[in-house]
Length: 523
Image (cartoon, rainbow, N blue to C red):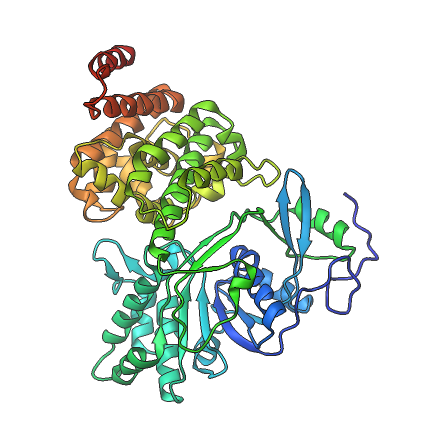
């Protein structure tokens, strides 16, 4: 597409086909993690809330490190467009809720100052699972992390938990107005998790330095839990061109998103909140159930699709789910291994929810990339697989398809010598990738690699590290992928899953014969 060079940059003074939804009268929210997801999700809900009820709920956005979005937002009067994409077409909306933006890595002292500001009543976070400085080995704040150690010693904090803790310290000293810290990341009980880490940071400070802040947390700070859901792929040059053409103005930072969006929130806000229900948010006491459902059925299955798709040589989730074997594996892991571990929220039709997931994954117009979904698996899978896997193992069942998910992850991120996982796997990133490469270089085979990763290094937590049979099964599937290809590994896992279901169904008079037939087929 050719862009008209005479087009002006998107701003509040620039005529465009779509006007900003709102103009905030003030600022009440600080958001940490100014990425695409926040701009396509919480910002849209906040725009709906302000449009309905008004209020000074404008958002100051703090990017972690990159200046790209921050600089563009300053150039565009803090405006950008959200492109909702489906096979039926693309629609645009401009939230208009941001009042400022900066890079926390460049100005960490500003994070502390904004949290201390009585006008800020909510701090929201989308810093990814990896942004909480949490050690899965100890299940506590990672006090060995260099950034955390430096933050404990003083100066402008650079870790997210350090920034929250130091900001709340400063707020306590400034009068201690009520405030809420709202995590919007894919962590189980993310509110309690965030509170625990902030308290551990304060408790690690020397002497009685944190006593006032800890008392302030007890009386005036809440940490509501929430579950967020919307597929938001990476922005592409093609999307920028399309959006600019639709707007009639240059937008350097449009955000793509699917039509589906969900936000379940615990209604525990110390200093008030926007009317997010105006955008469809659900305030509920069952956030943990929504989180279970989403993290396991959506995210856990999404990971499997991404790894299998990448190993199959396809670059997008719609392409991957369009392969029958991968769709069968996705359906199998969802129904037989994740669903038994989920307490379904009241009023949710689980079959309709699952059917909608397949529609979302099949959105070919969105083109969500396997490399994006498959990145950061060392952190993501730790939130998704241990409890469902342990539940199955405790019932005497091997979760073959969860094992296949881990085998796919290791095959993509830590390929054994002589195995090429392909360009899509190679493009995935992960904070543990260098460590995994070292483990893979010294491993004799897949079983040895899986045991090193799962048992010795406890990559997925301490409880799963005691399950040698699970590690061995993961390793077997790694070897199958390496020697015979990913299709053979999928067939193996599906066949074993079917066999296990038959063996565990004593009410089926044909179970024994069917099981024997399945075993024969596997030979």
